[in-house]
Length: 489
Image (cartoon, rainbow, N blue to C red):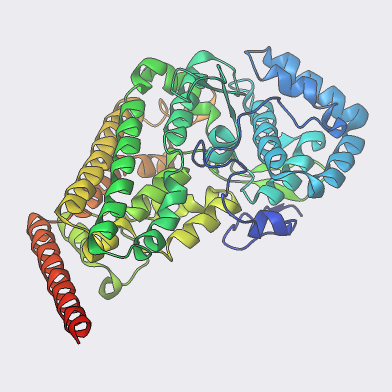
C-alpha cells in the first residue's frame, strides 16, 4: 500500500548529508551578494554526465513547448531507460556540490510539475521514475518538501541577463518555467529581484549584536546600529518598489488563467489521492509555492520584531503585541494565522537553520532600545514603516489577482465553480481558505505596525543617550582629575 511521503521538515529526513544540515553560513552557496539566492544559473542541470539523458527535457522548459511532445518524450525515455537513469542519478546525489543540489532540485521540480500539469483538463496523477526518483533524492539532500516550493521557483532558478549589471527586476530572469511564457517568467522575476535586493543584509542581521557589543562607547554603539538601519532602509525601499512592478510584469487575468495553475503543487483539492512517484511508495500531497515561503521576508519580520500571532500559543504566553493583535481583530482567522508559521517548513534545511540562529541573536528593536539613540529609533521606525508599505502593496495585489476572482466564483452556483480550465480550484475547503485572505493580510499589516517604537520611546532614547553621555563625561573628568593629582605627587 502506497504511503504519503513524509514531508515533516522540522527534523532532517533520511538522505541528508552532513554538509546540507550543518554547513557554515552563508546558507546559500553564494557570498551573500544576492541575499538568500543561490548563485546565478549557467545550465538547466549540473554539468556531470549523469544528467545528460534528462538534459534535453530540461532544455524544453526554457521556452514554451508542445505539452504533448514533452509528455511523450518523457514517457518514451522512462520506458526505455528509466530505471538506469534513476539509479545513476540516485548514486551521484550524495557527492554533488550544494550549488548543483539547489539547481537540480529546482529543475526536477519543474520537470515533475510540467508533466503533471502540461495539459489543462488532462492532469497526471503519477510521475515517471526517471525524474521522480531523482526528485526524491535531491529533495532530501536539499532538505525541501517534494513540491513546487518557493525555493525551487525562485531561490535556485535565476540568472542575470547581463552579468556585468546589478540584479534589478529588468536584469534578472527565471531560468526555467513550467509553461515558459513571459507572464509566468515575469511573476517569478519580481520575486527574484526582491530576494536579490537584500544583498548581505541577512548576514549582517546575525552579526549586528556582536558588532554593537564590540564598540567601546555609547556613541559608537549607536552609530553601528544606525549604519545597519540606514542600509536596511535602502534594501526595504528597493523591495517595496520592486513588488510594485508586478502590475506590468503579469496582468491579473493572465495570472489567474495561466500562472496560478503552475504554482499549485499537488494539493488534495486537486488530487484527492495524491500524486504517485512510479516505482516507489511515495505519494505527493503538498501545496505549491508561495511568497510566504520567502526566507528573506521571514528574516525581515523576525529581525524587526514583527510578531506574528501563533494560534497554538496559550494566551498567557503571548507577547504584548500578539495580545494587542488578537484584541484588535473581530474574528482572528486561525487557519490563516497558522499559514504563516507553516511556510517556514517549505524552506530548505539551510535556510531553516538560518532562522533558528537568527532567533538566538538580539533583534533590531532590542538593540535600539538597549544601545540606540533618537536617530536609531527614527531609522528603526522608518524601516518598519517601509515594511508596512510593502505589505499594503502586496495586499492590493493579492486582492486584485486572487481574492476578487475567488469571491466571484464562490458567489456562483457550485456547479459553475467546480473547475477552471480543468483544474479544481474552489471546493468547500479551498474556498474557506481563500476567504481568509483579507483578514490575514490585514493582520500582517497590523502586526507590522505594532512593531514600531512609540513616540514616547523615541523621546526616552534621546534623554537616555543624553544621560549616558553626561555620565561618561563625569567619569572621564574624575579619571582625569585623579591622574592630575598623581602627577603632581
